[in-house]
Length: 65
Image (cartoon, rainbow, N blue to C red; front, side, top):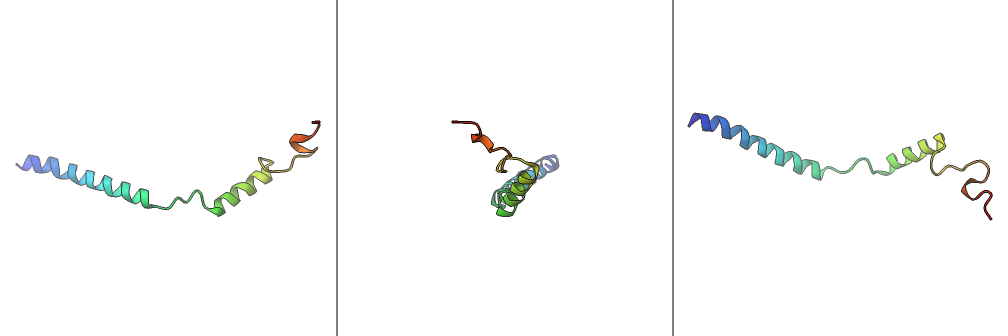
């Protein structure tokens, strides 16, 4: 009987901990999609010459037409 308790009690505790951890993770607000993060990414892209920054020489439409 003691061997069963030593085996099942930690297993049940682990399952309960996993369920609680998953529920907390699902309720946590997503922090990677807030406005300040998007602004920081846009600013970094503009400084590095990435998407959304004006290109010298007219951009994508230069020379067409």
